Length: 206
Image 1: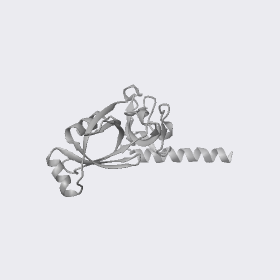
Image 2: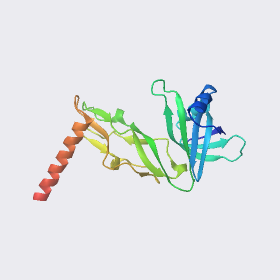
Image 3: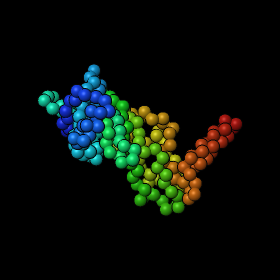
């Protein structure tokens, strides 16, 4: 797991006016909460952009004038809907010995090894909500699709998770579907569900 360091400043002024002024100086307004603290911060835009690009999950944050490193994770990033410029960032201070809830990307692997049956891989769920110790948060979780065929589906409960990580997303939520050309993953998922119900009914009748 990648860990980045980030140095920030504490800010006294809040509100739209001071926030706009900060951005003209290359600083992004932010807050840090958790562990009984709530502090307003000014974060260097370039440094924050590098952290976001690195996809580092755990960050050692240092406030200017203080020596202590604070372990934090990014809870929310606000961007301009048009320009995608950074507007605000929320940090959550964590206890390294207590599990935290966060989201990680789901990355599909093995598609090049899948049977050439004309099916199209539809990646439906791209992020997974998990719970684990802060030091165990993965950069991403891989989902192997090499054994899937047309009409096959994978749900959250089918994902092999690393040790110490618990999924908090609904176990029945659809992650991947292999659909026929022209079909949607929702239609394929509904058909698979109906087939499962029919099979269950037949077993019950027997």
